[in-house]
Length: 374
Image 1 (cartoon, one colour):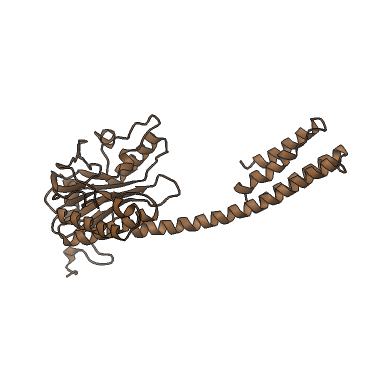
Image 2: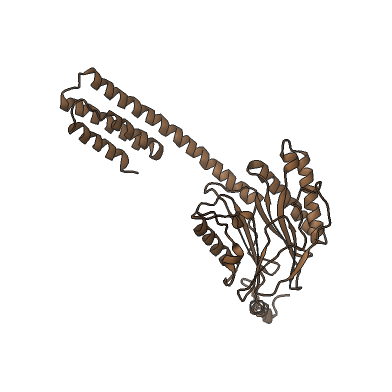
């Protein structure tokens, strides 16, 4: 790309020299600064325009046609196009600066609305990932959150209907309501009802289709301390996967189908949390439909259960790294939807025992055996 403008000018010179006088290289000389304008700096665009004008003038002097009206018109055309190229370059530069500012703001909004959870919460290993379908996009309608509560570690992964700022607002509402409800509600079913009411309130202040068509698919999970199980409430969302330490895998299919959050007016029935054993060394994987609906060139959907069965991973971070890389290979890097991923691992018994027996020494302080600490 960098060599293209000078190559076009050199090609125009050879074209003019080795063709009859009736043929002109003015279109090539005009094209060179136009190509440079959107891709290169202002200085490079200016030098390309000057080179194009000098090449046009030099050829007419060489051919002895510098006083002809057509020759003067061609030179004036190249000069005018070069000036327009400078204007285009300036506009593109300003747009790039604005886009850079928008990216910074969007990244800050993502960190505020969708903060990454800590690597360890309540004795569990946590990894989360948000993968945008477009390289320059930061956040859409997919969401995740992890909260350590008096009832255990509670999780949510969801997908808000729609895109844009309205979807981001709904994400903020869902996560805010989840964090409050997770602390106060004694049951996971109660958390789901709180989220329903929050989205209903959000819908009343909206206009247009979002006032009655807004909804959020979500999976809520609860991992009580020391019980070795996980409770799941699924509201119209792709089923989570439970990966065991021996390579086995279970899909956590809900015992009863349920509508997404925010659709309580269409039907109402009690939520029911399904309990599943969650042994040490197992990893719970929650994801949005950007993963399960990713397609390859033939239109075949990505099946995370089939792709992960029989595989072992050192931890949740490595699991998500491998999963994201595998999806990119499957789609050829052309995913059409955002995806949110949340992996939660219960450490194996050996890892837990090592942590319990390891002495804790504060920085600059004595060991517990020394008796200096209260």
